Image 1 (cartoon, rainbow, N blue to C red):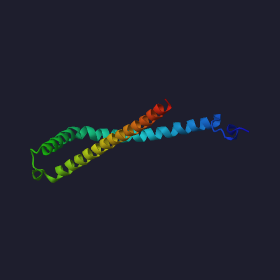
Image 2: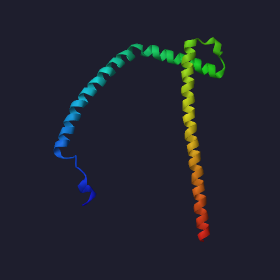
Image 3: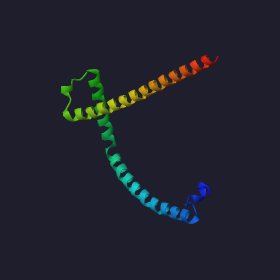
Image 4: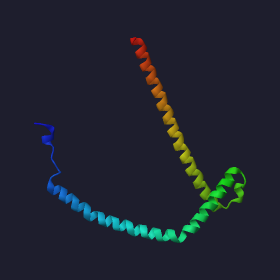
Length: 127
């Protein structure tokens, strides 16, 4: 007896129809919930979009001026400092990820060099 004869086949016609109906009915409910939530967020975003953009630009300019040394840290309000702190933490995370990728590339290159050395020595020993 072969292994594929032992396995139960769940792809018969009835199971496909049942799965299709299940997906059809449950998909609509999920999509309706998502579209309602998106509509609410879109309305909120439209109302505050200009304020959000201007606040974002102001924080980024403060952040850049602080990094350049044009503004002293003690001159910045505490709320803005908290936002700048979040920017710094996200920048640190991005740089750590970049360093991890670079370290992975270096390790991969070292491994490839070692493999090439081994292959070269095998080739030279055979000749």
